[in-house]
Image (cartoon, rainbow, N blue to C red; front, side, top):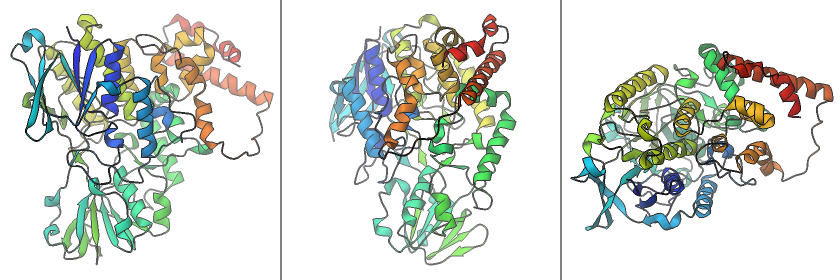
Length: 555
């Protein structure tokens, strides 16, 4: 029987894993190699080898309502898109609220995780940790959760850039970047147009003579601010929106790409990618268009070679007198402490069932949490994985918790094939999932997926918010194991928390809609709800419920 659980890492994935263990009555011990919590979000003035690092200007791409853990909303006065220092503060508040700190052992690096000789009987693991060089300890645990992240090993593909060894200037990976203080008046080339590359190009362009942003494939660009000034990820991301897009996926993707190009002509700005919008995580950047239109950042194609102080691009263009090159070329994922047979791959990703459990274990007592990528915040994904994992460990889900090894292997191969068809995965971007379907699939396993039809009958105001409002993580605390009494109120007040940080100056109010407009809006919402029910539950007797009447009651 599982009781003692080792958790590797005290970043967001590790912290929510500790809490999930406590919620299930398990006894977690977390090993953190540094002297503090936070993982990626703990800013370090000097890069620390083997650990994730961020730069001064990092701001969260996801809004606070979407990135919060499901039973701990961010404080109302926090900005909607938080600076990294505020993300760390949120994690400290979470750690304090759920009393996680006593379970964390700092400055203990996990160097090996191996099965005990009696593993087929006990499912136990030996965890070897190191506090100082040569000072090691061995511990025995019933189960292990790996939540150590994967932005720790920079990918610096110098072999792809002939002549770099003779380059007269300086070059480094974005992992080393902190700020632009030393780049005043320099000519800088940034290679790579992921979110780090875009952020760093903009940051440097404020002080540099010129910044050239080199991209091999282009990127779809979205801002954090949507129409009306609302956070972008709260608009058009309801369950109804996503269900409708799923019914007409090709049309929805093309329509969205057309909308993006109306706002910003990607071809004109040198950004147009070959892949569709939903095939790869977009570039989230509010300032890049302004830097391009002002000439402070200039888009360029892929680099062909280096020659002394010059950079030659594949289209034949040359930039002379380049001082610095920043490689924003991603990371290798690495779990060197795990046994080699647990690091097998399927495609580019680890061979994990539902991206969590290795399939070859006679007892499912090791899981990976947070090694996931989607068009959505990582915190709720990792939390949902941790909730599922701890219930599997405890045996609460019974014999249906995990399928047979053969079934898991087949599922993994099928998932990998589907992933390669749907997304632009590669060695640098080894996996991607559809955010809400993945969350719902795990929630179904746990027993916490919201029953929208029942909500519309029982609590129409809440049901309409869950169906038509942003799909915030609090929905997964409305019922079932881990139900949180504050979930309903948190959902109904989420727009108040969105508005709160803007209330620093009193402005004339926007006129309220007339009663006729309000009636029309509610009838439209109820019609939408009816359509949703018809599409997803055409054979259900619930579809006969007079939803317009229920919607009107919600007023």
